Image (cartoon, rainbow, N blue to C red; front, side, top):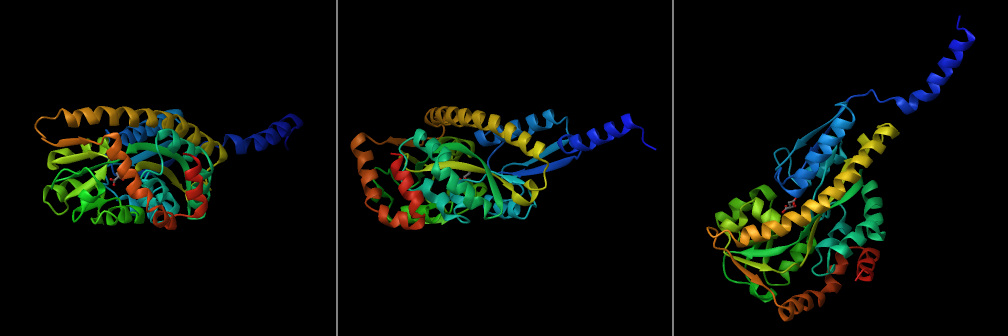
Length: 330
Ligand code: LMR
């Protein structure tokens, strides 16, 4: 027989139980394609270490860097099926699942990082979050890399027309294919881990990426010309499997979100710093011999006009509300 005091204790215990049920151990498998030392790689290490520390190892994060487990497109499928729980693919790659992510690829649609961050935190971010939910994953955070530049092995590029007849590796979105097609060039999509070899072997002539991705993959060592075009934005969506997320206790969801918020602040700083530093590392790498072309204001305006004249075509790829919202941010 339970005594009165014992009964009160038992009822209180039952009421408190749902809020204190922290005992389940589990592992989050997190895949990405860049190196451990990239801004994204470092941010994911921070996320792992902080989450493991705060839960005293109850939640573990197993990180698969540099595409050792999956390329990004496969990783999104694996997240949907809860084979892995988290990934942070480039928007261009998510664009294969949800076309609206490609808004960030449209050349010169966003002028600077401020506009990009306003897109993350405003209506564009909300639309992308809603569409992710109906695709089987939850978009927890937006991360930065930076604006892209163009490299190639054939000749200096000063105008979009200079890309005529060249073959470029891209991250695979329709917008990126159209961007190169409008210049008379050809775009092929390949996984990130193959880019160095493809350029070295001359399978493709060029590629577009940020300074830190170029430097970390030693792309500048196998390319002769770089044009600082800053034409499109490389950013990431940190996604988690809905099947996994929905089974987590509220307290764990809160904790993961909290750690991710701190990680995101750090990631923004790391991305900005590393792109800045890697630009100078590339420029000062005398053994690499890459020639860097900075566009002057007039040249840059010509690039902008060249692509803006085709916004009707680009806008067909994403939904009307996403495109018009992006224009409002200018
Ligand atoms: C690429 O494939 O070039 C990028 O998506 C790699 C990355 O994750 O930054």
